[in-house]
Image (cartoon, rainbow, N blue to C red; front, top):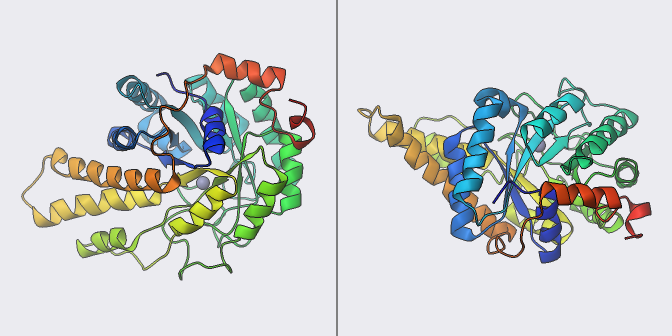
Length: 350
Ligand SMILES: [Zn+2]
């Protein structure tokens, strides 16, 4: 199966009432862990790479690993997504490379740190949407600003400083025509999301529910949605790590989001913790070992276990064979003739 459009994965998820995990990758083992989990659970899946990942792995290594994944797991619909594109140029280069989806994070300036104003965000996102849709590629935008920093990207601070305003979300969707929209409801990137177990005062699920009511055709995206399970933190700390106690987004909150239009859930931190814990354990218990496979294999298995669990919790498990993938050319036609229109004022026409 060739790499498929993220828009199609999300449209199908909306029909089926489930969410699709988007897992970050930097290397071969992470891609293998995700694909094995997808095969075991029969899940469609989104594999995503940040700018940092593209730099770390070099574009061509990453792209050809993804082609290998599509070749080796032909029964799995897999979309390849640029996570947090910081500029039109970043998104354009991803599309030229063969990504089937891009995120234009216009909530921040190209430095990836300074919040933009609304008009700047609309302008750059609209430009990416025009370029991408003409090529059949999906676009995710962001309105509101997430807390924290990951891979050098983020405004820092808590997630509550720039929570998404529903009126602005609607205007943004109308003026940009994005396929998917990341909203800020109090979550943060990185391991240190909350200093206590989050409840209604930190996670603004009511805002998410209102936005979905007003934008039923725009797929919502939850960023910073690792659950940061205590058992994974404990393994890292047991074998010589020093992580401060922290809380992530409870899976039940994500499942509530999925009931209200969340179709893409970004998970990175949990996998990082699983990998690091597994590697620490091997080296701590077997200080004589020096073959990288001795720790990379358990690390890959630990990540696969987390991904398998999330695929089941998000509901994507069992849905890989529900539909046959559209070509990127078919998606291009859908954007051109308006059948894939998401803008509230135009979407009803089709
Ligand atoms: Zn993010």
